[in-house]
Amino acid sequence: MASTMLSLASASASPSTSLALQNNRMTKLILGTSDHTTLWGTKKSNPFVKTKSRGQITMAVAVNVSRFEGIPMAPPDPILGVSEAFKADTDEMKLNLGVGAYRTEELQPYVLDVVKKAENLMLERGENKEYLPIEGLAAFNKVTADLLFGADNPVIQQQRVATVQGLSGTGSLRLAAALIERYFPGAKVIISSPTWGNHKNIFNDARVPWSEYRYYDPKTVGLDFDGMMSDIKEAPEGSFVLLHGCAHNPTGIDPTPEQWEKIADVIQEKNHIPFFDVAYQGFASGSLDADASSVRLFAARGMELLVAQSYSKNLGLYSERIGAINVLCSSADAAVRTKSQLKRLARPMYSNPPIHGARIVANVVGNPALFDEWKEEMEMMAGRIKSVRQKLFDSLTAKDKSGKDWSFILKQIGMFSFTGLNKAQSDNMTNRWHVYMTKDGRISLAGLSSAKCEYLADAIIDSFHNVK
Image (cartoon, rainbow, N blue to C red; front, side):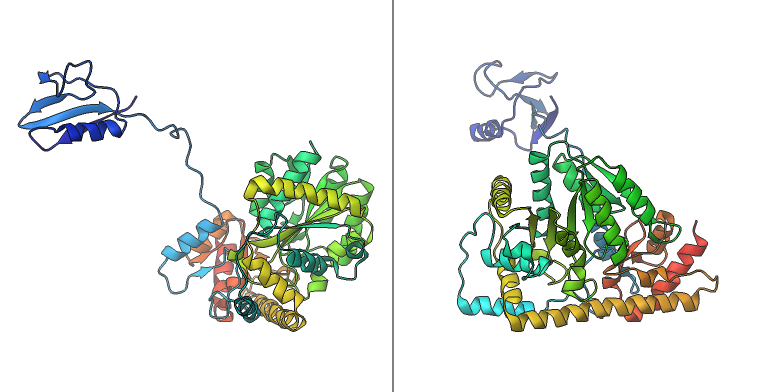
């Protein structure tokens, strides 16, 4: 029982003062050593005692220790913490290449024009804010499944896809993890090494066991395809294989079409279940169809699979938390039952999803004119990232006289680039050059402007060659 001393700077204490202290649940009396008298009645009946000390009354009481005292401080998020440190830096050359959010050439947040138009449509229609069903907005679920698989895909026409609106990619992954934990008890999820930092948190929280398969080869700064294939083969039969549909995060390294075919071969042979995370459809290459080709390849083989989607990047709807979980089943009946259980899992988690982002997506994808405008804007965003990727490579090649091959930067795709820098080198990037990034050497090219490519090249060359 911890104690505290409360001093009253008055010659006497009124009953109302003592009652207020009682109401604050101050508890056990701690007696002093000096002479004392009670405020009311006997010592035994009073929780407070006054002791005279140089004209003041000192009251000694004890308070309960918090029942939450045993909760430890959580470590800061490794990605979001980068932004906090960046904000505190006053250097004019500072760069925030940590968080994966698109920026303009002026390094400002960007709201797509097509999103503004979709929101104007919503205002014109005077749409209400009533609760959505547990599974989300029906129009959203339809267009999002069509966008992923293709509207003319047999799996759509046969109604074999169970689609439930989720809280962006993270919430959709978490809902899928809950489904795995409940209906595939003991099944393991195997995850690429490295992977997006939140994947492991999601499966840990859902109590789904996981292990890693090799993916990144530090010697080539490329894909360890042989290691990946070997580890998928050795995983227990019936495992869920978590795959990045396009623009692998954090490496930016994707399998080739031929390699995707071989990955599908071994997953089928081992009776595994593919589980795609698609966070960058259309944003990686600029083509919605090209970025969905890996998922469609597996679907065309008749495989059952899971796909978590997000519209944070490709529509810039970061704060709207809009995404979906899709489960492709072997029959329409299985899809209906699976959807019913996804809804059952969602109900105690968050009851039903938000409507604003869902309506934006439904308006954009469901309107041919807006859909075409969206594709143009995505091509613009993807094109800007490709241009700074190219300029960074050109700057590195021109400035670095060591003969090092920097071509891996051009082979990577999407928002991120894995620089190959280790933790000490990444620390040097921040401490000396004011370039903020994750400690695994990942940089977000979306946070880079053409004007700062040469500065970034200088920082990378210094860190790579002068820090071990």
